[in-house]
Image (cartoon, rainbow, N blue to C red):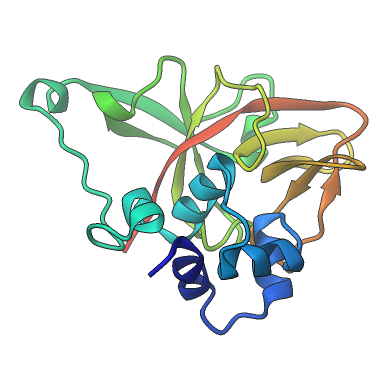
Length: 201
């Protein structure tokens, strides 16, 4: 099975136009990926793995468990726990935001200065499900194509969106296709990059 066939497997019965839109690519480029005429770049590979919860080794090489995300943590690492504040997106825009709770984060997943956001809508589903907790790396504000960030935009408010460099400019896209794209212009602030997600099962 080729990488194109595995991408096609992830798409399942979804229309190519809809699937391509979620990935920020054209339907024609998706077709070329699926038939093996093109090879996905690093950003698209990461996006596919995150969006569909599949392992990179499976997507690239067809090896291992499709949904394997095991991380080995040593006893020394697991004993190093940091407590970080959890906020709502609405509260984060305030100068002195009030936390709604805290969460314990083990050392491999902790970045100094990070905070967490409770997801309160479905705009980033299926990557960020409603009521999930997202860890935000507040020190990473450089926008990298295909990654998700927390933005405060004067005309919109505080949101989490995936950023794409399009011909018309920086475009913010929700993973849920019912939400419109936003062309990034005017005054805005990048709070940080989504580093990890913790969802209830």
